[in-house]
Image 1 (cartoon, chains in turn orange, red, yellow, blue):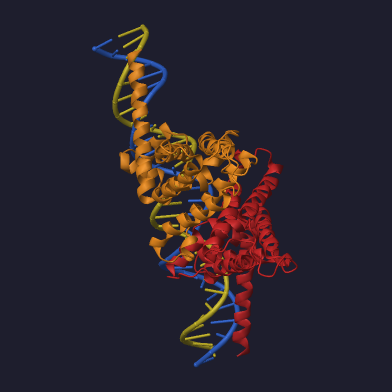
Image 2 (cartoon, rainbow over the protein chains, first blue to last red):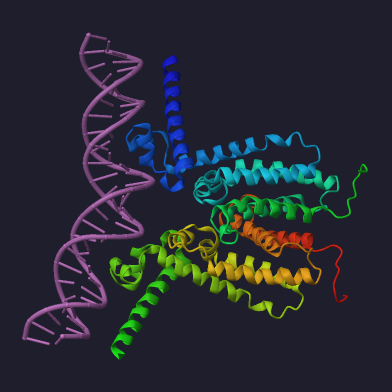
Length: 215
Length: 215
DNA sequence: AAATTTACTTAACAATGTTAATAATCCAAA
DNA sequence: TTTGGATTATTAACATTGTTAAGTAAATTT
């Protein structure tokens, strides 16, 4: 039935309209100004119409949450060119930092805000697909680093979580306005964060590299 | 004037009544259930009375925020007994973790939530006294570690911030329900976090200790 | 005793997410 | 073509939040 299809398509279009408006508000005016009523204003519908396309606000947030991970992936396009896994690890860290600096609202939603996780818990969903996938990428690099002797051999998941914790710690201190209390000049925050990453990377690098195929 | 004093004292008593109620709600029922009206219910006053003792909700939060740092200090009482600065550093990490696990709501307010920082920004206050003080303690241990060759010599503030970032990263991933997506058994979270700290401590320990006074 | 300050309450406002009831529109079958 | 049921949208409303305005009762000062 062609008419059914067109209706479905129109429905998806309005869904996209809502999501785009939500994204716009979210990115430009921050989490706090992302309200159902403001979305409705933007798309020129009444607030209740939004509920015909999304169960509740959390469902919209869940959608933006996923979008965030897609955006983050784009920041990692520059990785394929890097052969050395340890340099790749370093670059991943820098990309992570850059993403958090440029898209703080998305970062919030992906790694700090509770709402998206609440939603998943409510659905009895133990999986966190986008997060899993992102961490998996990191884990593969970590394993490669271990195989080539750049990192001390250890439980890969533990090391992966540790590395993630470090950069997440840095960026959430920046985003939640704690780091600026110690790095008073705004333009010094990014250099400080990068220097911190350098320090970390330097510290975790295996001191006696036992590379399998020479070096 | 004795009557003025007594009045002032009574005023402080009600302030304390409010703060205690706020703390109770906050710790037992979480941030979301900390509302002016629920505080008022607990102390059996009308909601507006609260505003006679506190300018707004943020002022109450600011107070709890400070309380949190006092509570955290108590967790560090076991440090004085430890002579070796590097062991002390490790223990500080463990204490930090323990505090975050046992007082997640306070941890939130101290290191994650934006509200308390917003308040300070509004008062044009660049200082974050409790945070400064806490980080200063850490920094002193870091410096001692460097002097005794346990840590590679480097800019102390940078290293201090980096170490803090690491443990903060860990604990905010726990508290904001991200880590549980990778460590599925609840009772394995604390061991994992501790193992991660061990890994970190082990990695930052200077590999060629040049201790000034032998060893 | 009268006036004034203090301590407190009730009523209300605006904003939020969300639901119920209702109107308008569209599409398929009679 | 018209009727009738589904779809799509809107208006009104509710409960909850922080917060303020206005009013009342009590205590203190004059």
